[in-house]
Length: 225
Image (tube, rainbow, N blue to C red; front, side):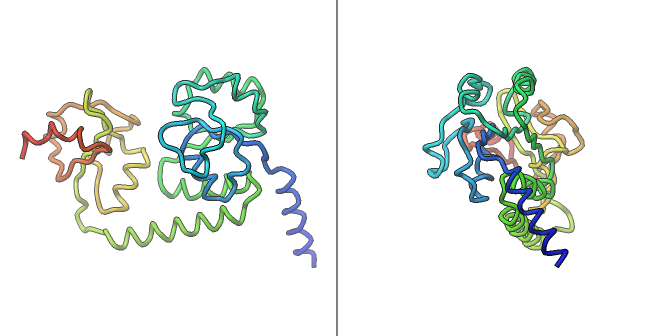
């Protein structure tokens, strides 16, 4: 009986503390809110590309690097979901001065991302949805690891941009995703989030595969077999 009462009290506390007016300052965080079935809590989002149709009606508070502070404040949010790279340090300090509750999320691995589903679910009053999403995600990761496991991981160069040439360091979630798929970031030894590298440095590390988000950025590599 005591356990049941404690569970009810915890559920009541969660509902009281749950955010009701959320502004998401990263498209990835907006999509997590959508996955949790909590789109009704979103009163504003920061844009960074095409939105899911389910969020088409949500007011915009700007784009990457162009946060519209007055628009955000007019929405009277009771929680900000923040990825540090989506706004400048000065804007983040400004938001902190307004004393708006802020949840800063910066996963460096897929396991950390899974734990953050739980955290966001709790803050939005959807702890069970957060647990289900986390469990589904972890099960998917284990399936991928088993399917693509290699005794010798495939060396891969991940190209973020081509002019100048940028990649990702070892502490980024993309490096972890490559490992899940049986690959190895050839620049995993670099700790910078997005180090600039030379073509010569890439060739020296001899990747078996070059990945990029835009096929047009790969044209320069055709001159090397």
